[in-house]
Image (cartoon, rainbow, N blue to C red; front, side, top):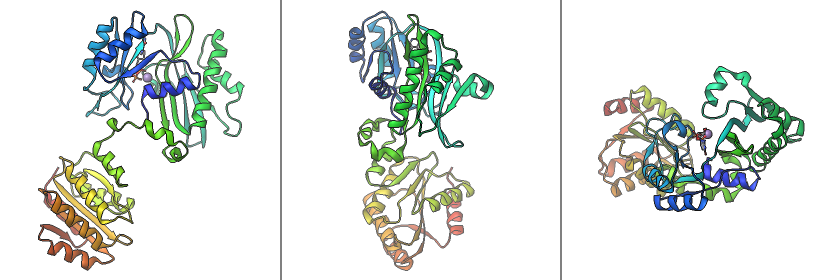
Length: 387
Ligand code: GDP
Ligand code: MN
């Protein structure tokens, strides 16, 4: 689970990692007030989206007056920001962070991540902070220092010093630097993170270390240990259909194609997506209704697929095991009666109670195309002539 920069910075503060003063706002007038409160002569307005590369995409802008802060906030709020990390569709900005402007002397990269190959956390540091760490890792891997952490020991002082030396920080800042790594690791470990990143960590003109940017990702599989983090989840940043689906315990992910799918079982869903691709079309979503799906869940899943305006055809592919074919068929018919279906629907059913399921579809008076097999389903999807 990703959180926003402003939320990550609040957590940094709890761990005594220094961050610039600032506040998050949702409107331009508030932005001006915050700038007034912060004082000083320069402010930075930063779009809060779940993607980096904002500096390159116009999502980080400097202002010299509180009025300019308001003006920039007004432009950013509501805009769709495209950065090298958002994909071409971009991400909508609903919040901006207003911070004191900082005079930067030097920028570093600092992070903690999970090294899957080595099965342990790795702490990373580099003198080349700022905006191009990914390119640097490819072109000059030698400029990146890594320390692999034994989780039983935590981060020993010598490893923290190796990192600080390795990134070439002024020795006068050794204590502050090791302090940041120590706290960074404590945060990473105690909050079950998969990533904590400060890019850039800066040395200011008055020789202070400051986390100018902050990124935290939590391990979803450990969220049950940190229920308070669920409040940090930004539903603005999520696809509204995905939010609705998760409220109904449906495993739904929106994609960019135009053939909606409803399947039981993640493996069959993946196979169904392949089948659609092979038929020359593109899946509009992933939807695994699961083995124990009820009629209500099937109805909801179908409604969600139909709400996606890109959907020009639907393939329902169910192997009835625990989820019986008649339950599925009832759900589909109920949903179809509720929502006006303007697109063709191909249904492939097999397994428990398949005959009852097919009868329910046939007697519904609705126009379903029933496929006899996976191959036939592919053929019928091809016939939809979408994509
Ligand atoms: P990202 O591009 O999404 O990672 O956003 P960052 O928060 O890292 O900001 C991008 C760049 O803006 C940073 O690398 C800094 O160089 C610059 N920047 C951000 N805040 C300030 C600031 O207060 N003062 C100065 N001088 N530069 C800043
Ligand atoms: Mn950054």
